[in-house]
Image 1 (cartoon, rainbow, N blue to C red):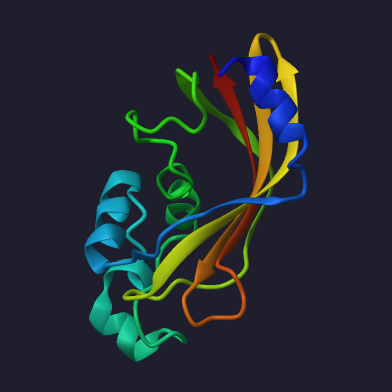
Image 2 (tube, rainbow, N blue to C red; image 1 turned 180 degrees about the vertical axis):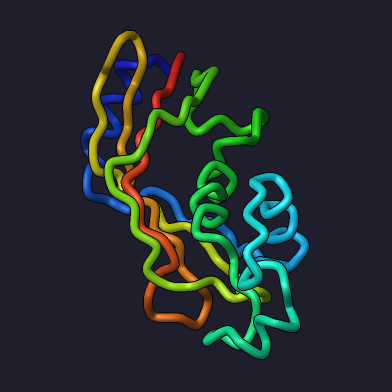
Length: 155
């Protein structure tokens, strides 16, 4: 599928939910790997005993930026065998317009992404799309994260 065809298709889907991911368990191992990668080893994330005793959540919680960083995985952008659209050869995370962490993700929770297309336009021989990325926590009313993510798709 060519860029022009994908753009025309997407422009008809603006303000429409375009993706809902599978549920992903948030384990202590995942939180610890993120803490090690970023150096953010604050006790509320990695010290299970102290979090149980001192945290208002009664357990460890995922880093907000861990929740955000799961966007490519939950959105299905990292599987080379199933491109986001036919003909797309490369996806670049271009940035964010808005970002809010509205609820804590407790260890053992399951999360999933809901994505709504906000904009699609051709820019510099690529397709730029803006999506609202909302991370639901199973059984919770408020989402964990709401962000406007911008991607550039190359054909």
